[in-house]
Length: 127
Length: 445
Image: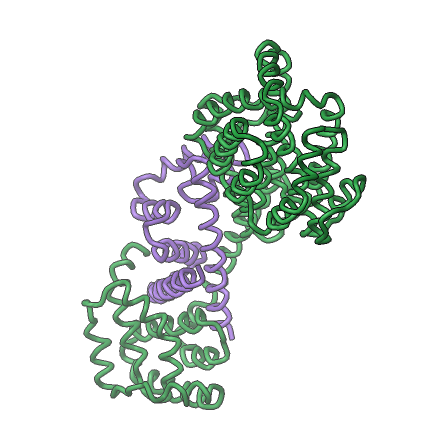
C-alpha cells in the first residue's frame, strides 16, 4: 500500500508540475485551472482501474459535450446524505452504494496524498 | 435443555479452537458428534466409553484443552462410571471436579467445589471451564448407554410428545442465537457467564428428572436431524446465518449479505477518516466521511489557489528546489522535486545547461555536507555520465521506455539523487517519462 501510494504520489507530482509549467507558459493562470490540472493529473496518475478516476478523465475528455447533461444530473440527485457523497466522489452518481464506499476509500487515499504533494510543492515554491 | 447441549458445547469447543472457524466446520463437527453419539448408544458402555471419549474429543477439540481431561479420565473412570450409573443432581459438580483436578493435577477432589474453576478469569481456567462444561453430556450418554431399555421407552415417549420437542427446539434456536452473539463479541467474561448459566440450566434439568436425560438425548438426535437438513439448505450462504425470528428467504439473505459488505466497507473507511473511530452509527459516520472529503477537496482548491499565485515564480526557484530537497526526508518529496525540476528544465531548453550545472554544483555541495554516509555508500555504484551526452538524451526523447519503467525509475530517483555528487545521471530518467506524459498533457490541459 505504501509503495502504491508513493508511486501514485510521484506520478501525480510529475504530471502536476508539468502541467503547472504549461500553465505558466500560457500566462493566464487562475486557481480554477490549477485545480483542474491537479485533479486531472491525479486521475491520470491513478489510471483507469478506478471508477472515480475514469469518471474524472471522461469528464475532462468531453467536457464540452456533457456540460448541460451534468447540470441536469446534479439537480436530480439532491436527496439525502448518500446523494451528497455521490456528488462528492466523481462518477458516484451511477454507482451502487457498496461500490460508492469502495471508491470513496480510494478517493480519500488519493486526495490525502494529493494534498500532501501540493503542500510540498507550495512549500518549495514559496520559500 | 439437555438437547441442545452436546451440539452447542461442541460448537463452543470448535469456536474456541479456532476463533475464525466457519459455519461449515461447525456443521461437520456437529455431524461427527452425531455419528459418535449413535455409535455410542450401540456400543457397550464399559468397553468403548473411554476410547470413544478420547477419540471424539480429539477430533473436535484442541489438544491442550483435553490432555488434562484424558489423564483424569484414566484415573477416575471408576468414579465416573459409578456416578453415571446413578445420575444425581450433582453430576455436573462431579465434572466440575474434573476441571479442578485438571487445574491442580490431582486425581480426586471432594464434591461440592463445583464451578470454582469457572469463576476465575484467567485463560487457563477459561479452557478448563470449557472442558468442565462438556463432560455432563458425556455422562448423559453414559446413562443412556447403560439403560438402553429406558431409551427405547423414552424414544417412544419422545415421538409422542411433540410439544416437548418443539419447546426444546425453540430452546436450541435460542442458544444458537446466543452463540452467534458470542462469536461476535468474543469476550471471555461473557462466555464464562454463559457457560455457568448453561451449567445451571443443566443442573435444573438434572434435578427435574434423572431419567429424563436419556429421553432428551433421543430428542436431541431428532432435532439434530432437522437442523442438519436446514444446514444443508444453508450451505450456499455460509457467511449468513438467520437468527431467531429472521427471515430465511433468498431475498432477505441477499440483503443481509449486502448489508454485511457495506458495513465492512464502512469499517474500512472508518480507519481512513481521522476522528471517525468514536462515532457510532452509519449516519454519523457518513457525515464524517462527507465532511472529510469536502475538507480535502477544499484543501486542494486552496492549495491550487496558492499555487496559481506562486506559479509565475516557478522558473526562478529551480535552484532553491534542490537546496530544499536535501532537507526533505521522504522519498515522495524527493521525487516530486526531481520531477519538477526536470519538467521545468524541459520547458526552458535554452537555460538548461547553465541551471543544470548550477543545480549540480549546489546539490553536490549540500549533499556532501549532509549525507556523507550515504554518499560514501553509494558513490561506488554511480557511473558518471558526461553532461553533453545527457543533454542529447534529454532533447531526443527516448520513447522506447514504457510506463512501468518510468515508475521504477522514479522510485530509484531517490537513490540516484543521493548518488550524484557531480554526475548528471538523474535527468535521463525523468525525460524518458516525459515521452509518456507528453500525450497525457493533451488531456490534462
